[in-house]
Length: 397
Image (cartoon, rainbow, N blue to C red):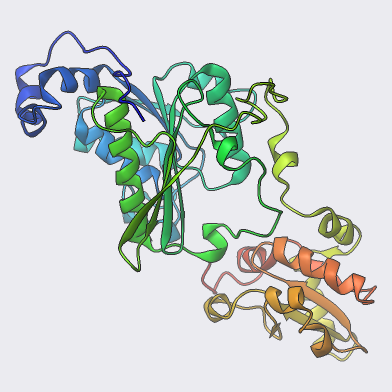
């Protein structure tokens, strides 16, 4: 990939205080005064102040990026602190955007922080993106990833993409005017339920730092015009082996949005495109979903001998160790996918499935109904709703 020109023009000057602050950059010949002035003049948007956004925001600020935008609508939860190092214990319950801004200004008071405390969607994405030179994508769901990609392509904006799961990370740069876009790499999202989120599958906290720092490295290279930007390369990081490897990504002439004959010429319904549930699961859940309050009442009836059912937890064993609904039996979802679980199911009892949030249990419900368990149901909201509404003495995750 040929070296790209700098993304932004240099600012007019650096103050004496800024020269002192950025001196370790200024003495690098490839960065120097001109590169640091470009960083000062740059406007970078980071989507999410979570696992990837935390290190990205802190290092972009420390590097001297003049304007940092943050898109974030969530609040700080205690479970975030294992990896989202921009937040601290005293920030629990606070707006993540506000918490991130405070940490950024503590790191670099010269950075202008712009907050977009909203969920990124089709109605606001163009207005927000147009204000920035570069986007750093730290999202963790496929619908938003495709939204970010399509908006960036339609606006001609470059963006740095990162992804993390358990011990592995991926990083690339997408810029349709000079190379491939995200759809060239992943034309279609994975089937619903196929790829668990970090909330379901977990992530090694320090992996966020490795991938987030790599994203910032790519951002600095783009802004200043130094180095070989990872446009056309997918960088894969395997933490357990401490191994980086790179795969070539070519621009797809048949890409739906940046190809020779694009079929996507405006923003689409991304939730529908990615789908939270398979069609089978959504159909199975209609009329067969109970609330945690209903489940609590059923458990009382069962204890009194007035109702009989089997409660089945379809999460993974390590999740079952964290919290559980009393009386549940653990049969992980993958045993239903292989069919091995079906012979374990009682034929004389109503089946009630639950998982963490209700997605996996709906998938299992569809399998059970197809196998003849017509009166089976699943618990909407799963164990998250159980802890929140019924038994807050248990830990959430």
